[in-house]
Length: 125
Image (spheres, rainbow, N blue to C red):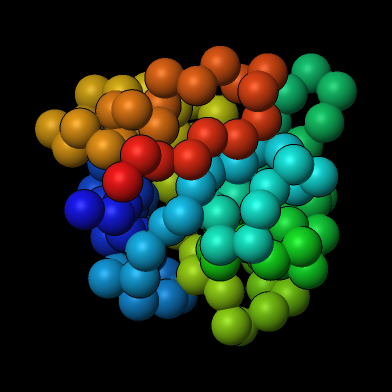
């Protein structure tokens, strides 16, 4: 059974503010350069980069949606395209991976086990 936007929103305790909760997520990526069309982009903050600056790029590369910090909800990249799903969470860097790992959903837990350095993970079907 595929993972959906609704599953990710529930696992991260986020709010799906745009998009259909029943739409599938083909994979999850934290690197806009490595994502594959159909992936969900998670905009995390690191020491050198802020993924929120790359949301528009991720959408242009075929991301189906993005998980972003609520504090960045008004950012230009986040609001660039109404056609993509958006999930707002309290803190993408902390919430996304930790919450997916603690989720009762085995598919979400499997996605969370990927080291951040890999940049993307595809769920097994």
